[in-house]
Image (cartoon, rainbow, N blue to C red; front, top):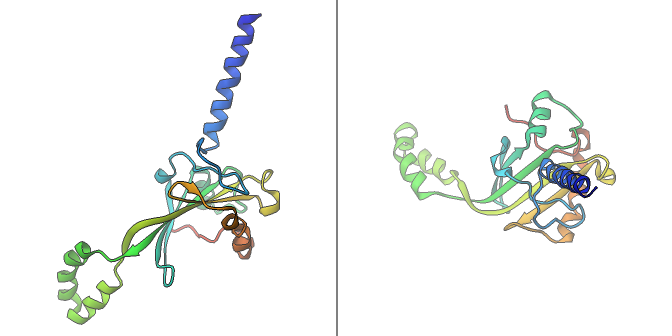
Length: 186
């Protein structure tokens, strides 16, 4: 009897550990409103697209997707299936003297001095990180927000509740694309 109880308890603990890891979310602090946590290994996910946002934001963004998201993007599946997680990483854009020194002479030869200076004035690299945001698809859990949960983390900590209360309203104009702005860059 005792042995059976131990086997059942061990099996239950193993199943819970598998479910936790399969959800793709860590044991870290959950964001307010939606309860989304930083997913394990998100920095290693496949690239969906990149973007640059001009003044006054001036940031560079990379959109990444877990395996479920990438399969849906490649197949053109809408709505996205449950289990989809999309990450948006953002950095301040900054100029790079190192890049400009390397690119400058070649650009001057090919374009001329004036055009090369214009080109280099618009050449940016990722600077300090600003935040990372997530969309997590769970149509049962997030019924009131189109099936999506949202999160923003700054320096690994969830942003405050006020930030999270704006997420769905911001994504509402993209309802015809399952509330996702980003198209897949092929």
